[in-house]
Length: 343
Image (cartoon, rainbow, N blue to C red; front, side, top):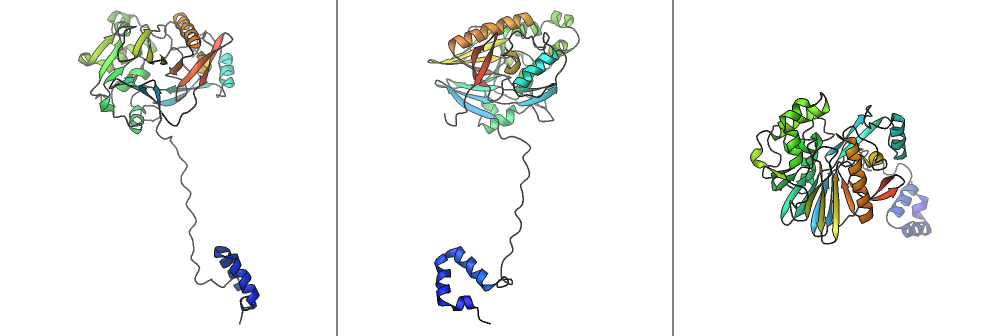
């Protein structure tokens, strides 16, 4: 049987004018629904990829003058809000501060951000994170370093700001070997003196402080020949100078990194999460060994940061852990830096 559409010259011309796929579709329609039933290929339904369960590499490169800096996230741990997380604030006050930061009540997410500084041909790792973790929420420093193009074997100096486990445990791998086998380990002399004193250990109350004494000795056992104790206010690498910020621990150090007119204030644990302890500098964190001293240090450092308009890196700031401080009532607020896709 002939098709009246295709046999009509005028209609054939109209179909041709549609061109390409449109013309073919129109022709198919004109031929009827079964015209290509025997020859049309079947296309399998596209498979839907599995939803991701992990982030990509957690690192952020930037520069301070001529110095290259890489912020590296070791991971984040969400914990129930414990009584005593802030010693001098109620749970309602803490939850209100969390709510103002759009964080859930009655829990706390702690982020951990070591960093690598490359200065004058030396690679300096500042703090080492939590170390191996079978659950994988933390202990991500080594894979994230590799993702950033930094081989752990090329670290020349491991500089520790203080001896809490989330800063020193990453010195060792899961098998007890050195994570940074070619590095000299720099430690604050006042911090070393406190935690390595047997009398201090014997007087430590049961709980977190005593556990820290035990952990410090576990991490540093047999490493005496690799360890150099540093003093405050003396440059330890080109442009990198530690200064005393005692209170969080007895020998806690922060660092100033400077190249020309550019400067970075590396505050370590002067504050924990900024939504709580930058906004409320008078709050005494349960992790602060000397709450009043830590508060005094915090206010002094942030007054200085506001006056100098200096960039701050916070170990427990949300990644990439960089921002500027502004005065805000009796406290301060952190204005995060904008992500820069190029250096």
